[in-house]
Image: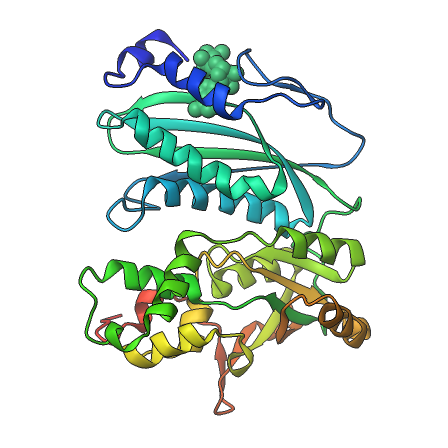
Length: 350
Ligand code: ADP
Ligand code: MG
């Protein structure tokens, strides 16, 4: 990076910082000929199809240091990238981290951030091979780039869903949004007090420390079941639209079929909200949403059960002309609402 940018840094010395990061996390391996320290990293690519993804998070936009520590922020930023690789059925490999650090930022803050990033990456043996460092005039910016490879030669794409395919999700949905809401109510609301401490902890953890579904994505890809896949980062209602657009199809989602955790149900009950609607709006669950042809439905579901992979059928793919619809527990159907979680607040004016 250029001198004038580094001069803008006062409390932190850029090169010391990079040296510290390099010493701590920059260990080379056989596949990394040159990691941190040169103009670019040198890695040996294999013949497999490479995956590349990047994600930027900005303080005040994507996170708030009143409700998350820098360890959480790092963990979540890495998880968002890992989840993109999971949605392709891939294996994550190398990491680049670009940082803009506010003037108030200290060494210990950067150390915390990296602790979170590397904690999220550790289970997958992902190696840090570079990045960039700058000062910031207004808050933290963290941009993470992750490379990976398609494990079984065929990355899972958003574009293969066909009329009649079943629509599935992994795990449970809506937890992260409820966790965020709990964090945002500065003093626990009276209604939150009705949610037990273990349930509150579960929801907050699902928000602050999401697990990317790497193993599930690889299993799906290996078994070649999905016709399409995406990770749930924006929320089911938003991400399903992406699949439908890319595949040129419509869909019908059954609200009463959603996999909802006991903690989310308890939270929704105490807040006077509908748990399935929270899950539909969702956001940052980092579960996988995917489609499977109806001809292999029972084979797929038996296989997932045998492997203890939690999958739930939540709807079906329809022709594009049918649009994207939601069927409610009372039998009504309506177009998929364009929603954000806030629309479910009792006091909402929208
Ligand atoms: P250049 O001016 O050539 O971009 P830098 O001084 O920015 O070089 O970076 C020197 C080395 O340190 C490079 O290998 C770069 O990838 C690495 N690096 C810089 N900032 C970070 C960071 N925040 N985390 C990890 N590696 C970093
Ligand atoms: Mg640089």
